Length: 90
Image (cartoon, rainbow, N blue to C red; front, side, top):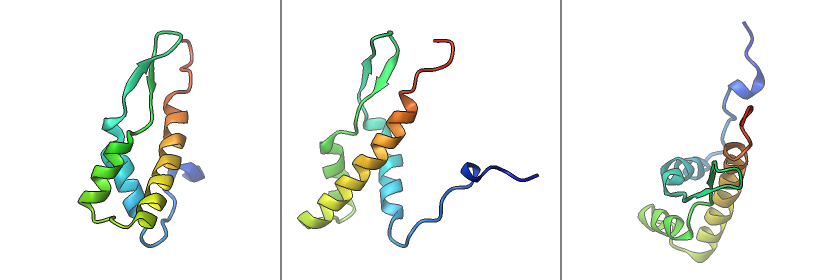
């Protein structure tokens, strides 16, 4: 049986695993808010969490941190768009 393409994770470029590691580690730091319809809305990963993660993993130059934070924000945005989609029947 052939699985759809989205079933398989994409191949990562060398060195890009740190971004997915950060996303997995910091998802729990996202604040929750109450949406207009009363459901939970996931907010962005706080900047202070990114700073703490980067410091722990030795991302210490400003250029490296800016790249790390920008890519993490984009991944976070994509994940939140999926998480915050209205659920069927709600």
